[in-house]
Image 1 (spheres, rainbow, N blue to C red):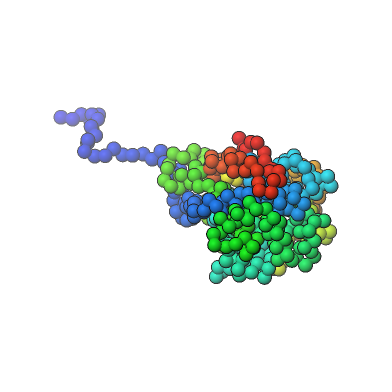
Image 2 (cartoon, rainbow, N blue to C red):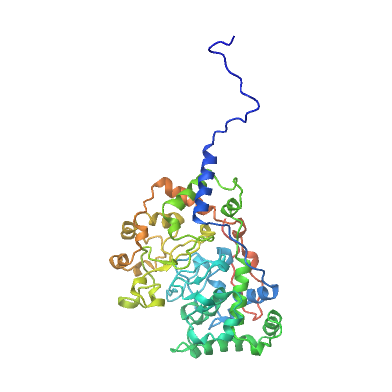
Length: 448
């Protein structure tokens, strides 16, 4: 006869009750939110032929594409600095040094921060104002208008992602400079056709380049090619070498529950619930079509783009669309490898990831409290006192966001989970020499 206090033995035929752990609940909630928001791992780019990649690598690092033969595409996108240069605003022709140590004798800077080169095969709109974009129906919008002919467009094998290489060569503050035959050919009327033709003449004087182009584009003589062939190769190299999809976050999305720490899981949940995914919506965590541009209430400094009193303001997307509602709206940047790509913002307003995240907590107040002292001292006097005007078109999606210290810490740890370890050291992509014989810019070490 059983006593009242006797313990009843568990039935061995019944499975034991499983009590969810705190971690399993974090994983389950993260996966629920991922499904709800339609997030996926980054898919790799399509295969790109080694001939295109090889040609593009040389062109990207060769200073022959600059007006005065003193800068290359990669001068401001150093592999050793995760395809940036560590500066709020890069410094182009006529300067010395590389990376954070680069200086210009006249204190000159470019107009916007250098965007990172990661996973560009998943991007549809390029540059901070979306000046290069994929259009409905398969077209490509660019600053060159009709100068980019149908024949040239047909060469751009990666769609709008093939086009960005066409334009730094036309910017005096980036590569073109002044007082050279390229700049004289471009002129005040922005004759892209003449500029691109003169660049191809330069390249055609080097037999090795003629051979490389004809191997990369079999069946076409070099003399029948245009600078679209060069841009397509440059971007093919960039897409091939700087696309990464094995971050802890990607591996978690592939099903590996052990890739994220508990804090990173909490950060992922915060990222998907406090408002970050209102803008960062895709697999590379930029914005979906139709939602790519926002005014995030960021302070303006630097030379500007010729807008506003004194020409030192930058009206962002309005410069492309002509719509005043787009004033000071800038492209939502992808977040993959963001830990490695400081500074942040369209003029590099924030030198740390923490500072950038903290800006989004009550953005009106953080704009007025903006501290420019971490920025290059030469840029500090250029800060505009136009905060009231910035807030006129500030995105209302940002208004409810409030981040306490714990949430901020969680978000930063989640953003670090977007780093692919293979992206930490990219120095191997830099060639030892280029066909022109000009010097190759390189730094010897990458991010720790």
